[in-house]
Image (cartoon, rainbow, N blue to C red; front, top):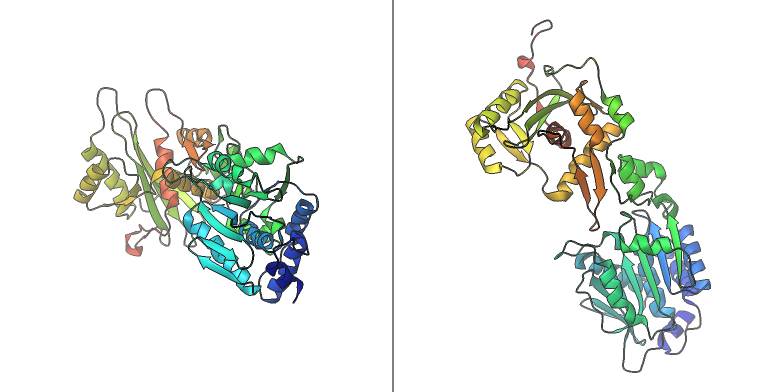
Length: 466
C-alpha cells in the first residue's frame, strides 16, 4: 500500500503534509495531462503552509489559475489535512462561488482530480465525500442567505470581488464571511482562502488584502502572466485592448473608488481631425452605423453617424444632428424622428441604435419613415460595455472626430465610478439650461455596433459633385 492510499485509509494524522501531498498530486496529475502548478502558485502555497496561518488572500488577474489551483488545494486538504472530526460528524471544505452554476463547475473539477488520482469518492448533489475519511467538499453560491451550520475544515471563496447577490444586487461577501467563519472555530488546522481578481477599492476582498501580512493571514499578488506563464503579457493585450480594463482584469490593479475621468485627455485630442467637416458624404467600401439619444423636454435629442473603413479599423464621425428643446416648447417626437430619418437616408442607413427610453413612440415614428430601431444593450452593465468599447477604440487611436467644441468638452468631462456590487457607473456632464452630453451618448452607440450598412456603389457621387 503506497503512502497516498495509506493516508486515505487511516483516520489518524496523514503521514505527509498538505503541501507535500499537493506536490505529489501535481506530479500524478501532470503525468495524466493536467496542467502543472505554476512556479508562482507553488511558491505562494509553500510559504502559506510552511509558515502556518489561518488565511491566504490572493489578488490575481483573470485566467491566472485561481479556481483550478484552489480545487487542487481542496483535494490535498481532504486527503492529507490533519482534520480531527468528532466521531459521527463530517468535516466540510466549503467552496463558495459567484453563482450555483459556477460553484458546481468547481465540484466537477474536484471530481475529475480525484478520479485522475484514483481516490475513492462518492458524489451526491452538491457534495463529494472521500471514502474512509470523514471529510467532504461542498459548494455554495454567494448569497446573504448563505449559512453553513456544519463543521468546516476549510473555506475557498472564489472571485470574492465579483460576488453579486441575485436578490439584492449587492456584493454579499461581508455577510457571507461573517456567517461562515464561526464554522471553522473548533477546527484548529482549518484554512480560509480568499481569492479574486480585483474590481475596486470598495469590496471585502480589497479590504482583506490591504490589511497585509499578519500572524493570521498571508497576502499574495500576481498579474495573469506571472501566476499563469502560459498566457503572456502580449496575449493579455490582444485579449483586452482597453488599457484600463486590462490593468484591472489581467494586471490585477483595482479601480479607485472615487470619481475619475473616463477618457484620457490626450487620446481625445488625438481624435480631432481639423480637416474633417460634417456632414461628409459616405464612400464606397465604408460601413455605416448610427446611434441616437432621444430627449424631448429637458434633454436634447441627438444622432451620430460613424463610417468605418473596409477593415473596420478606423471609425470616423461623418454626420450628426442635435435638436435642443426650449423651456417653453419641448421637442415633438414625430418631427424629431423625421429629422433624424433624413440623416439616416443620406447615409444609406435603414436603422439606428438607441436605448429603451421612448421605445414605443420612437419605433412607431421610425416605421412611418421606413426605418428600424436597434435596441442598445440594457441596464448599467450594457451601458458600461458601450462606453468601455468607445474608450478602447479612442485610446487605440482608431477614432476621428471633427473639431466640435461641445463634443470634445463633453468627452473630456465624462466620469466614472465603480459601484460596490461590481458595476461601473458612467456619469455624464449636465449643462446649465439643459443638455446631458446627448451627442456623446449617440456617438458611443454608433461606435458600439459591429458590421454596419454598406454604401451602394451607384449611390456615390462622382468626384467634384456635391
